[in-house]
Length: 71
Image (tube, rainbow, N blue to C red; front, side, top):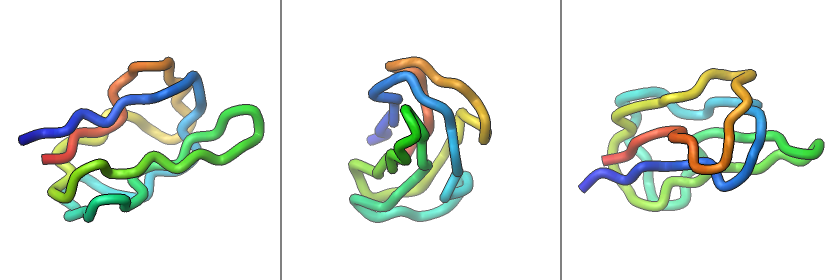
């Protein structure tokens, strides 16, 4: 089962913590977003393997944009 990780708000990608192919546990940080000078970690909601990273550092993303896929 794959889990799409999507942005919850308009923000800028500050840091990408994982790479495609990495194994993650529930609650692991995937990327860190920045919005209104606050850093917001985006966490894995399932354990699995990161099969896709769909953002790059510096990207401005909108609410609902795909960030990553974990399966």
